[in-house]
Amino acid sequence: MSGIIGSRLNVRGSGLVSKLGTDGQVLTSAGAGTQLAFEDVAGGVSWQSVETGSTMTAVAGNGYPIDTTSNACTITLPASASNGDQIVFTDYARTWGTNAITIDSNGLNYQGDDDTFTVEYTTDGQSVNIVYSGSTNGWIPIEDDTVTDAPSKNNMEGIFGFGYGGSSAVSTTNLVSNAGVVASDVTGVGTVRFNLAACEYGEDKGIFGLGYDGGELGMTNLVSNSGVVATDVAAVGTARSQTTACSYGDDKGIFGFGKDPSDTAVTNLVSNSGVVASDVTGVGTARQKIAACEYGEDKGIFGFGKTSGPVSMTNLVSNAGVVATDVTGVGTARQNLAACGYGGDKGIFGYGWDGSSPVSMTNLVSNAGVVATDVTGVGTARYQLAATQYGYDKGIFGFGTTGSDTAVTNLVSNAGVVATDVTGVGTARYGLAACSFN
Image 1 (tube, rainbow, N blue to C red):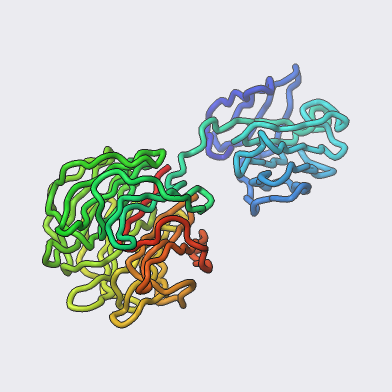
Image 2 (tube, helix red, strand yellow):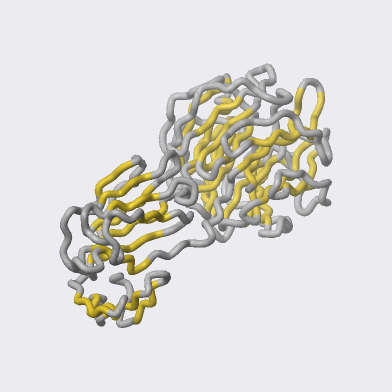
């Protein structure tokens, strides 16, 4: 209410019109033929932690996100109230349509009715702003609006694709559900290859690109928002392998670095319609066998890799797709690792080869692009694996080699915690790539 200054608010569904003063104070209210005086409610509400229980008691002056994912919730209002007391409830998880909230007015009237009446709110995405108006009408909703469309959540599902399995390159793919479950093999589309890269574009689609099939390649394959891989698109830019990719700017992507067959730092931007642009002169140390992921919701980071040996330097990517100069590395220098986002705005580098053996340590990336020191590894140490987001805010590392090909996966929580091995599904392979789609 305090954000509405000197305006007139028409309240949906309550038959109530409130006049607001220039300081945001409710001055008068007309409804059911009654003139009412209100106290100042301009001070705002104090928002509380998310409520998940089946019952709760509300306190005047507070706002409550109510999560009814697991159960309905009965809310008991204060037993006594003063004119102008305000409470706000909002549907935290958009589940009130499944598990409603019920308001117990606790002996006071609610919109003119006594508390023998049942008051329920049953609409997904709804918020209810109530103010106490005195004993006659009691608590009245001055707003009960619904956010009709939930914001789109990207990166809900993932796809692992291509790679080298057994004795040959493949174009097999494996979908990852929004719960992190890897599906069995899908027959490949496009040129079989390995040591390629993949990233998201267009907010809900993906792209596989570049790679090796006996020589460096430059073609790409688009992934629809239902996880269907399209046929080859002719190469744009320098053909190369041992490269990587990530998204930036919320809806675009970038391929970068690799081997052509010499080490390179060249990049190629991917538009929000999946069109790959010509080469951009490389910035930073030319290298191969690196990884990349998103961070900060709209930026990216390239990290680690190999020059004459494993390195740990990073290069940030702005939300306009501009690659920055080298940042001195943090963590164990390594190559043939993987990276993905987690938590909605952070990233994680994991696994790889440190020059003498496979490793499983990880390094978290903050939402400001700062790489943290090593976290002790969980799961099978391996390299030449891939990683992607899923479920919007979680990640998964998968496949790779220990010296023997594997299909094992490790889930990453929305707090960046890597879980123990999950038995592999699909063709064991290495040198593959992964990305998310919606």
